[in-house]
Image 1 (spheres, one colour):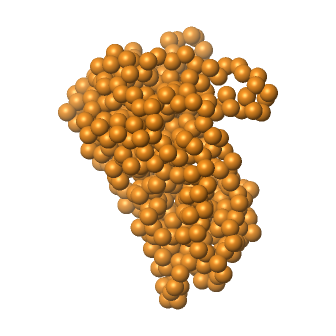
Image 2 (cartoon, helix red, strand yellow):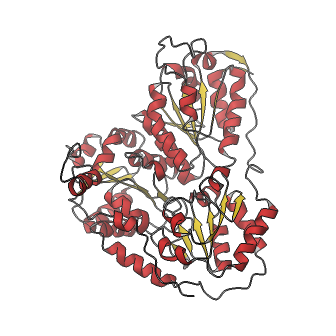
Image 3 (cartoon, one colour):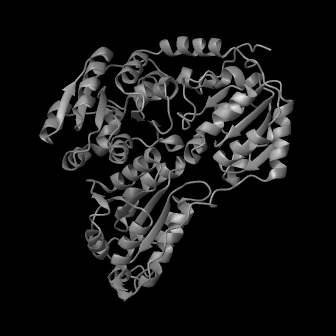
Length: 543
C-alpha cells in the first residue's frame, strides 16, 4: 500500500514484535514520529530527558526482559550521546536496535554544514555495532528492518544500527511490509566432530571445571548448564557478567571470587559463553581448555584452546551433555566446594561497610527481583558478594565500565519488568550523569527504586589519589544536592538511610509502594574492595 517511509518504519517494527521504543524527537525524525503516533496503541513510547538514556534504557530492557530493545535518536549529537549506551550494549552482548536519523541524502558526505551533520556517521556507528545499514529509498525500509532483526536474533547478540535520512522517511511510495524474521534456525549449532573432541576431553578429565559467562544468559542455557555440571560433578565458576546463569544456591556454583581457588588445580576447563580473559583465564592456564562460544572471534587470538566449539551456548551445552551419555556418575565434586564458599564468605566479610550493605540489599530485594549495579564501592563488592538466584536478575556494564549507566538502565529494566522489584544502586558521581531522568521516572510512573551512596566524591579515584599519588587530590570532590529534596522537586518520594539496617528497611518500604523512589545513603571512605575482587589465591583441592 502507499505510505511514507516513516509509516513503513513504524509498521514494520510492529510486525517484528516491538512493543516499546525509547527515543527523542527532532526535525530529521518528524515523519518517523508521525508513523509511531499511528502505532501508539501497539508501541509504547518512552521519552528520556537525555539521548544517552535512550540506549541505556533499551539495553536494560533487552538484557532483563530477553527481548530486543529499540532506541531512536537524531543524527550527529544525538547519535554521539547515544553512543555510550551502544558501547555498553556491545560490551555486554545485548540486542539493541538504534534507529538513527541522518541528514538529507543529497548532502551526505559533502561536508556542507547541515544541521547535526558529522563526517561519516555510518563509520562511527560501525565501531559500536555488529551491523549497520542506511535506507536509500522508502521501499527499502521493511527489508532493512527485517535484516536488522535477523542480525539481532542470530549469532552473538550485539547492537545494530539503521540510519534513515529525513527525505526517505518523508517520501511516499507503494511499500510492501514483510513477515517477521523466524527465530528457528538462526542460532549456531555445534559441529558434531568438534563436539566429540570436546566430549572426549571431559570424559577423561579427573578434575573438570566449568566457567560460565553472559553467553549462557543470552542463549537461555541455564538449565543446560546445570545438567552438564551435574553430569560431570564439576564446579561452575560464574563470571561477573554471567551472574544468574546458575543459582548461587546450587551446590556446584561459585562466583568469580571462588574461581582462582579451584581453577589452578583443574585438569580440563570448559569455558562457555565467555571471552575467557582476565582472572579466570589466568587461573586456568595449567588446564586443557575447551572454549564454547557463538562468536568465532572469542575462540582464537591469544586463546590457545585444546578444542574450540563454535556454537550457541544453549545448543552447545545440550549437545555436549548428550555426547557424554553413559559417563559414569561421580559421587561428589573433586574439590570441597563448601570449604571454598566458606573462605569466600570470610574474605567478603572483611570488606566493610560494603558487605553489610550488600546483605541489606539481598535481604530487601525479592528473590526474583533485579539489581542494577553501578560503578560504586558497594557495586564493586556486589559483583562477587550479592547472591543471585535466577537468570537476568543482576545487571552490570561489563568491560565498558560505563560510569553513569546505572540509573537510566534501571529505568529500562523496570519498563521491561513492571511486575518485578527493580533496584538501582549508584554512587553520587555516576548518578550525576543521568539525574535528569528523575523526570522520566515521574512522567511514566516507572517504579524503580534508586539508591545513591553519597560520599561527595568520585570515591574510587579519590582513594587512588590519596594512597597511590601522595594525596594529590584533583577533580574528585563533588558538590551534591540534598537528594531527598531533589526527588521531591520532581514529585518523587525521597528517603534517607544512614546505615545498612536503615537501608534494608527503607528498601522494603519503597518496594512495597510500587512507585519511583530515591533513597540517599550518606557514607564515608570505605575499605578498598580491589585486593579481594582481584584475588588470585587458590585453596587445596580434594583429590
